[in-house]
Amino acid sequence: MGTGKKRIGILTAGGDCPGINAAIRGVGKTAIVKYGMEVVGIANGFSGLMNMEATPMEEKALSGIITVGGTILGTSRFKPFKVEEGESENKPQIIKENYDKLGLDALVCIGGNGTQKTANLLAQEGLNIVGIPKTIDNDVYGTDVTFGFDSAVNIATEAIDRLHTTANSHKRVMVIELMGHNAGWIALHSGIAAGGDVILLPELEFDLDNVCNCLMERSNVGKPYSIVAVAEGIDKPKKKSAASYIGKKIQKMTGLETRETILGYIQRGGTPSPQDRILATRYGAHAAELIHHGQYGTMVSLKNDVITSVPLEEVGGKLRLVNPDHYLIDQGKSMGVCFG
Image 1 (cartoon, rainbow, N blue to C red):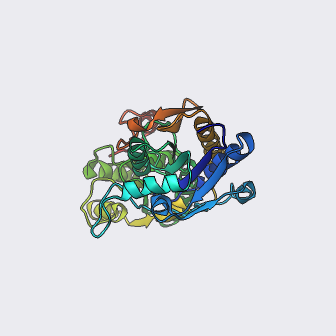
Image 2 (image 1 turned 135 degrees about the horizontal axis):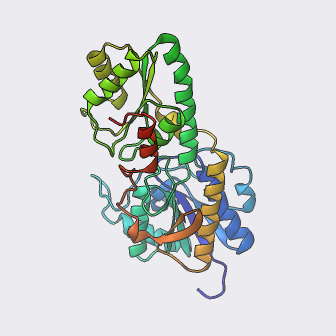
Image 3 (image 1 turned 45 degrees about the vertical axis):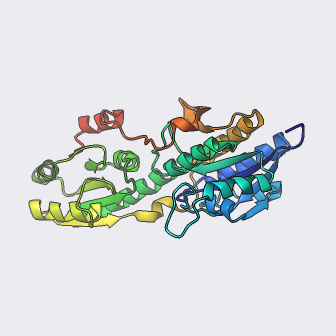
């Protein structure tokens, strides 16, 4: 490599989430200002590497983006190692060739579980990769927290806060469905923060009889309404949404008037919280440090509030789930929250 400037690529893949731009800025500014590196922005995830959609990024292109949600680079769920019908089988080979054509010394991959899995496979193909974990679901293995999560919890908590007033006015049970296919972190944190009465998570088995008994008991002691927070990935019939399934069952089994709300993509959009901006900036800056020191095949991570890194091969394909004896579940139970 000699003593020439390092040239690094940055891409964002998978679902969007608040804080990605802060991470891009953290990587880019540290790389340019501290280490004199050249930075190339790659559009639309791994498909941008396939199609050579790459633009050099000057420092001024990174100004003013820390406050913006989503990703200025664009994203896609394109998977280079998965062969879809009609697609070329040598996608990883094309990516490798384009990485070389662009003259990249390293590639920063910002994304969730799927992205880190792909990043690890590309590292095994010989590319110099550093991963940055992002997802509102908070389920990336190998780190205590991902950026995007705090913003999503803030939005979900505010939504539940607003449901309290309607539920109280109409003396209803309100069921709110929050994001989280495999991991119930958003439902757990926002449910506890906003005083949810029932919290249902994909990681915990639940019995609808227990849920309904809890709601009937509340009604019988004169509590006028109840809030039920459910993660989208709870055990339910295939075609139904979690909120609709739980809401209809509650109304049928208890006779209590029940309404459902699905918060959906609102949780993923908008301006990142200050905490997410700071975490994403710390992650981004550390990714540039790792590249400077040639520590590739790694993902930046937060352990006990210290920024460190873990080998990518330990991350890909694993999930960080809510442990059934998590302290928030214990605390909730001791205050009468029903987990089904």
